[in-house]
Every structure is written in structure tokens, then in C-alpha cells.
Length: 245
Image (cartoon, rainbow, N blue to C red; front, top):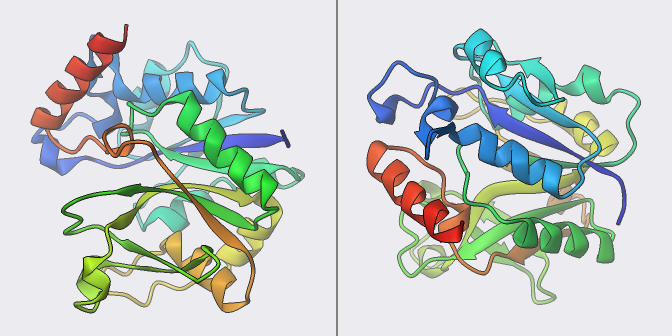
């Protein structure tokens, strides 16, 4: 397996939690949910683990002090692409791949992530993304594939045609990129959208437009790729993790 490091996005507020506490610090079985994500990054032998912090950054860093990891700060939450840009200095002299996870996806398994990394390596892809199938994919970005099975486009639900909305394969927001090329490409995306944010899927579009190889690995189940957005989902995750132990 090629060298890779892991970047974990953990800067958001998580307003749907209806709590002032940073989203990734909400506890599952008495542990902050971000701990589960750091654990999985360590389990798969990431060379470096970098946590992108923002909201309540001192508290998040304090809660993660038992881990030997590095931190990048996103002072303003200006999108996923912007979050990754904040870690560029840490990876200036790094030539490996970069796995990008979210701190609010605590149910991921090492098996799923290793399959994604292997698919990326076997295809010598410039970028690879994790996808899942949903019977009702309403609200999620759809993954459009070419006849050869490569990723052609990620289209957001609100921008999808009626035909595209019938696609059940969704982007779950977990990626692996060739690190050096990723940071070069992030300089080329813009925030010309309703939210005024920089989005990581825009880098994927950039690669596809240049006829670069982007592949997708389908997760065995959507459940483990699902982000925790509210207290109900937190309770469900707690039940699932208890059943695994």
C-alpha cells in the first residue's frame, strides 16, 4: 500500500445538535465522536493524522490531547475545500496520498477505508471517492459514471435533472487524493455559489474536465458512512457501536 495520511474535518458548529458544544465533541458511549474517527485513522496506519479545528478549537484540541496528531485551524467555515486548504503548510513536503474524513462519521470501519485506498492504488487514480447506494437518495449529491465505470460528475440534488435524480449512488464526502496535486488544484476552484464556499467536489470536477482518472468505491452499507447531524442520529450510532463491541 502506498503512503497516505489522514485529514479529519472537525471545524463545524453542528447547529442541528441544538447545543453550543462543538459537533465533534458530542459523546457516543462517553467518548467524543471524533475519537472514533481518529481511532480508525490510526488503525489503518495513517502516516500523519491532522485534525482541522475551528469552532471551540481549544476545547477540541484539549479533548484530543491523548493522541499524537497535528492540527490545522479553519477560523472561518468556508466549505470543505477551504478546510483542506488550511492544512497545506503541514503537507508542503509530503508526496503521499491524502485521505479525507469527517469528524462526525464515527461508524466507519477499517475494512471500508482500506477498500477505498486499495481501489485508488490499483487504478492509479488522481482521486477516489467513497459512495453508497440509497433507495431514497433525496438531498444527496449523485455520482454519474462513464460507460467504463469512472466518475464523470458529482451533481448536487438541487442541480440534478429529473433523470439524474433517479440515480441511487450518492457521494458520502470521503475521498483520497494525490496530495501534491490536490493542493495545487485547490488554488483553481472558486466560491461562485449560493453559499460563497469552496467545495471539495469542485476539485473532482476539475480532474474530470481534464480527463484525469477519478474512481469510486461503493461502501457495503450506507449506515457506516452516515454523518451524525442531530441527537436522534447520535443515539442510533451509540446503539450500533455498542452492538459491535
